[in-house]
Image (cartoon, rainbow, N blue to C red; front, side, top):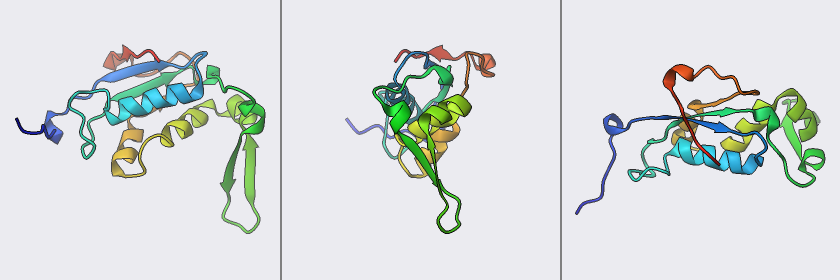
Length: 142
């Protein structure tokens, strides 16, 4: 028996919804990364992009455990000398919770073309309303 090699035409992409309300950020991000890569499928191959589309709802209600909300910081550099900006996650969760979830998922997919293509199939929404109802997404439990 030979090893199965998925081709681009053979891959069927499904839609999944993950409800992040009351769940830890890392658990939600790990589940989303697994679905985006396609590791839950029996036809998974690390060299092929065989993942699915993922919609994460209720990003504003995701939980950061421990003291991460006060102690964890997001750093970015403006490009000018001495301009390293830092923002606490408590501020980010109030202003841009979608960004926090996207950043967590981005850290769990590979830094390759496959990972970048997988991140294009991720949609994150602040509340329970999303625009992908026409795709009839299935609910994925974390």
